[in-house]
Image 1 (tube, chains in turn red, blue):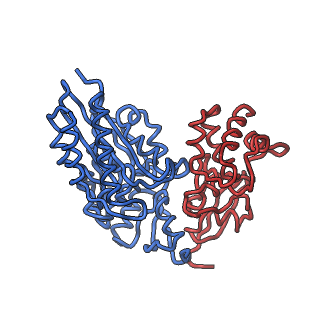
Image 2 (spheres, chains in turn brown, green):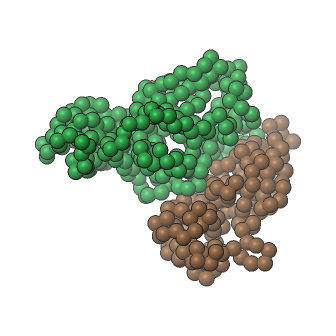
Length: 157
Length: 292
């Protein structure tokens, strides 16, 4: 074990986790490589694209910009924790129905950003949706179907 | 190339006193780490030269917001997201809310802090022009005590500040009393979200009988630090706006800025757009409803 490693405890999708890691290891790497939750994607690795978005204590964050030590004691929600045991979350269902996903790389981040937006603002306007998702880049859909999906999710939830 | 992570340390800190003692015992050795929106980008690029940090994220003493009849005091760890939710800021300090809203996007705004934006000392940061217009002061604390520094005097040059190696930014204080003044903020970047500004303009002013009474103008991304344009302000005070005054003010402000060519823009573009934004600000000011 490296001398600088620390033990960090936090909760991911309702399950308590303890990891030993360098304190500045990115939460993104811990989720994917230590906890094997590979739904969270790496895009740019510098907080620009939103592919690695997760919720930390209910707030949308870029997991590539969080040193794992700062996740200590926090509740993290990743894409794996969004659906219920028997059915998809309204946002996931709406993305399916509206064709909001194509290649899928941005989708976990888009869904978490949409979830965070809808929790704060259940019936968002088009401009609120655009603002809520402004930090999430998509190279396939052209965004319109994603915006439609968020509007639709507002009516499903 | 990515950084070699085992060479980096991050110390947990329980409270402000512990942080200040650490800074006193080993000044310059340990540096504060707040929301990480700048430092983690450098880390990932293998460009984070400093290796020893202490974690101040979560220090309650640095998160308090206090409103008195004269001032609003913002804890250094107030995030851009939180700034946008504070009622008194929405009513009286819209430039700061506007700057917070245009910094990164939601996920960045949930982590980036006002104190971090100041300490990082980037000339392209979004909140400094607003802080300059509001004549903000910054509280620096150490084991020796606290001192207030005018934000105008905080930056000594590119990425250089008056902060001592044993000091930490604890609060930002902005004086109230801007009610009724016309306020204007505009950031020009490559796109609406996530862009680092090419030019960032904040202005505030008031008119009486069409004559400019008070005017404050500050800019980001056009000099080694964010700047207050005091010569342009002095030229404008007491003048009635017309096309001649506008053109003279434009020449004045273009002489007052010192933009450079860099990856985001050119000196020529920055200079021209600075003039355009000044004109837009003054034209809107001239149609603003006057106070009695």
